Structures are given as C-alpha cells and as structure tokens.
Length: 340
Ligand code: MRU
Image (cartoon, rainbow, N blue to C red; front, side):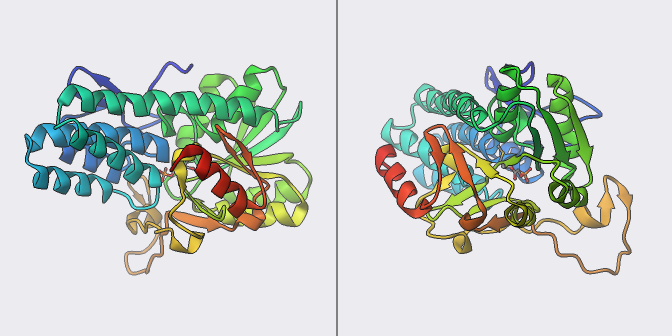
C-alpha cells in the first residue's frame, strides 16, 4: 500500500491531504464540521469519486454531532454535504448510507463513525480487487494511457484505474504509462504524475491533445480510466476529455476500459443523459494556478465531466468482475446480485 492517504480520521479530526497543493507542498487540511467537509469537497481539497464518498461519510458523522438528535437539522446538513458536487454519485450514496444508519441507531455516534469507517475499508478492499481483476486485461509490456487521477488520492486507498496499473506493475508486467495532464485542473500532471513517480512506474506526462497521435500511431495498447457515475445502460460520466479519448480508441480499435467500484453505479439513472454534469468556475480555464492566461472579457464554458456512451466502452472493471455489452442486461443482473 502507499505511504499516504487522501483521508484519515485522527481522534475526532478528519485529516485530508490537501490535493490543491500537490505536488509542490504536502500539507494536511483538517475538517471538524459539516461546513469544513462541504468546503473541502467543493474546493477540491479532496476529489475523485470514492475519496469524496469516504470524506462525506465522516461529514455525516459531524452532522450527527452537530444536530444533537434534531432530525430536521440533520437532514439539512446531509443535504448540504450532498450538494457540494453533483456528478460523482459516490457522494450521495455515502451520505445516504451513513444517514440511514444514523436514523436506525438513534444517532449513536460510535455506530455512525463505524459505518463511515466501513465505507473506507470496503472501498480499499474493492479497489484491490479491481486492481487484481483489471491487471488480467493488461498484456505484458503494455503501454497504457490514463486520464485524470484515479489513484490512492482519488479513493480511500490504492485506486481504481491507477490501481489496475499499480497491480499490473506489482505483478512484474513491464508496463509504460502515458498520463494525460488533464486540463484545466491538471489532476494528471499534479496528482497522477506524483503517484506514478512515487510508485516508480515508468511513465511520461503528455498534453491532453497528444493522446490522439499516440493512439493513431499504434503506441497505446489500452486506455484505462475511472468513472464518476455509471448509468444503468453502461454510459459513463468521467473527467472531461474521456469521451474524446473513447471516440479515438473506437476509431483505431484500441481497448478502452473504465474502472470503478460498484458504488459508482447509479442503477436509478437509466442513461448518461440523466447524469448531472458539474460546471466549474471560469477561473479554472482563464488561469493556470494564479497566472492569468486569458482576457477578462472572454466567455468560458467549463464542464468538469463528460459522458461516454456505452457503445465506446470495451469493459467496465468492477470488484465484481468486468461488465461488457449488453450493458443494460449485465448491469441489471449485477444490481440483483448486489441487492440494490
Ligand atoms: O474533478 P475530479 O478530480 O473529482 O474528477 C475525478 C475523476 O473524474 C476521476 O476519474 C473519477 O472520480 C474516478 S476516481 C477513482
């Protein structure tokens, strides 16, 4: 396992590794209230669907402490947490799960905290299984392209797509990884590159727009990336740029995998058209860090995610196995198995 954690509890404090500062500074951000947690998720101190879910789970614990048995206030605080970011379904899923537990145990704080702990340890276990299963899809000496950050920083530990890459590396597959820088928040450059270097995996960082040429020129054996919400028909919402990669992969016949725990599947959302896509601040595009790169007067369109149609996806790697076409039928069967 890695020697850092995106989130951890120490006593009554939730400690987040402040991802806004990486890779330049490694500093903790301490949360003690629902407002702290909401701010940390919204401002992307912590990000990545499963890490957001784990963080919000402890947010519900803080909500229970703050509400002191006042159910209306508790519900209001949970709604605040759920509203922090709209696309990653792990957020609402985790809040609902811990809130249900809180109601069922008459707001017994140790029971609520234990439920949040369980979400974290289950996520790590799911990621290790995704890594084990996903690694079987990685041929020896494969060159892999990935997008955004899906590693330990984006989860409660190990990672999803980057977990697959790390598992393949741990199995002595002689792999090489290209990481998209992932404009505009640069999760690839700042976070995935940091994790790849720490893990000692041979890799190179590329501008997002170099991916098409690498794929066309036969330099990529497979693409593996994450998901923020998977609809019941297999459409996948993930970091902006995922859809474009899927189109290029389909055109050139390169396998394209999304890796995610089943907690990222929204069985109640029939297709990708129903997935809310977050639009973020204009400054993410007009500035790089604190440096302005565009005129104040320009309009900006900054969707944080896009939706990849299931027809472009070779397989969805979950802890329960690899889901393939026909997605609607196979996901319905998975739903039954999970009892959700
Ligand atoms: O905006 P972010 O950084 O939260 O977006 C993260 C992604 O899109 C990831 O690919 C996704 O959450 C999966 S993380 C295991």
